[in-house]
Image (cartoon, rainbow, N blue to C red; front, top):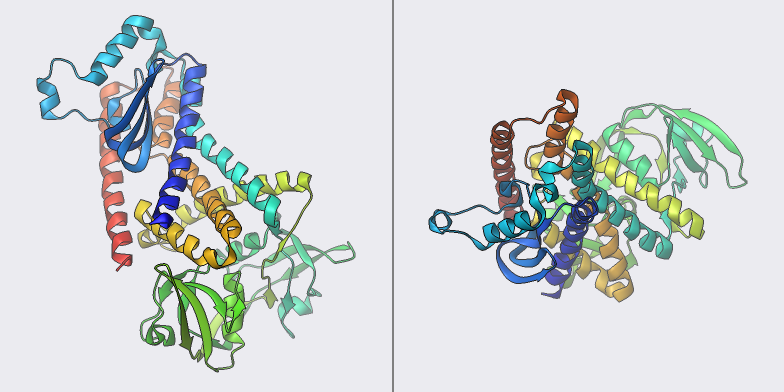
Length: 455
């Protein structure tokens, strides 16, 4: 139960930062805020301070900042048929009071288009700011996963290019490399691409190398699972040795033969080096620590191989570099989310790879459980680290040009700048309604998929 509470609290913090971004910029520009709410549905707690009702609602998976002069439909506050029979609802009474107090000058609609753009953008920016703050905390405590090369395969294209273990990749195909994840993420989506690398040796010497991944067959020992960067099993192959051993989706692998595993690369290497001998996996499942024995199977794989292995061990950095890498961490996750979304349109990432609130709560719960053996300190750091990704994700997702999201409203405001007059309310409302229906349908599908994975 405590794991679920931690997950809901983390999601709540993400929502608060997002809505507070809208709130603070709206207030600064003289826009009256009717309600600032966490959650949807009926109010559990409502406190009025000044002009604003601060609310905690029944369903703790969302939130809104309702401003005077902004369409109620966009905040999830719909009137029912019963409301239509009432002379005046409490919300309508509150609106009337503020209109009488301030006139039309305090409404969102009365402000300049650039002010409205700033208010809308402030929500996603709030999430990016939170991602940066969390990054400072995490990196300040455990350092960064620098792109240091741990192993160079003998005879590989990397060795032929003069690359050695201990060298650090600082640039790849013209883009700066700050983390091991920059390399591995790019390779995941561009396995066959030639890599123009800039590297630094341990003595500080900088050099360049170009390697073209070699398409080759390799023999390896595998379990038949897909493992995320959080060491969580995200897929189990049908009839694989992992399935036969009882490994399930959602299991978090924390050790192999008693050796603690910190990255998915370490797990993969440990399995490959088993040479077909039985290994013991320590896993976390539904709050329990289990040991599962599995014998990796010999498989022939075909892949584009560079011969480089980067395990992403973390290194402590100076306070100034903490700030630099915190910014880079935030940008990394913004790019990662954007790239993943772009790959949905090419089919390389499917809708089933999306996760909604239920999936997030389950993932955070599993993360908390797998971190408990390391102590409270690491539980907190791992949850905050996960929060970096979630906060950046929420910021980017809200900027998508989909009616019903901040990005959808931005499109209408940009059109207003171009046309020098606002889009007709009835047209904007119709498009927004269609967008919200599509979002609800997608959310329903993701919710069903998340729940199905729990069983």
